[in-house]
Length: 174
Image (cartoon, rainbow, N blue to C red):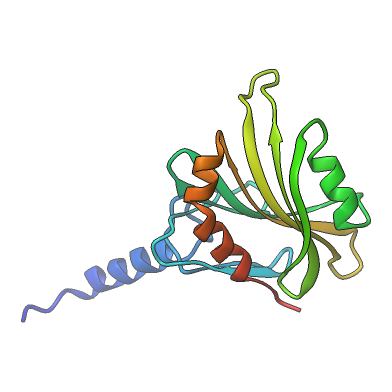
């Protein structure tokens, strides 16, 4: 067995650590995502390709790379005092198909499926969201969501197991 020089070993370790973590690479593959800014983490299937904006973009969440659809987990500060108010804001102008109580992490949440018509520069699409609103320390409330959007319900159905896995893998740090 041939031994690698120390510099080659260091480069291999550095390369593997950069790509095993979602922090720092926009196309990193990972089995977990951790967001210390908003205090949440999401366990992912190793087969999911995690996408995250490169610095200096804000650390809000991540997307999962799937053909024809968008899946994401995200957190952002909001003026909405509840998941109900946040859902009303997010679905304005769209037709609600389903709405039900659920949980995200350890918090009560709302799950909503809705259709939005073609408008301006975007085509018609379907979207699913699981949303909760929580306070992070002494800061304003934050909207936490796991979402999926696609141009039709067939793609929503195709990626439902990935979406459900993201919801089930979502946890708050505190």
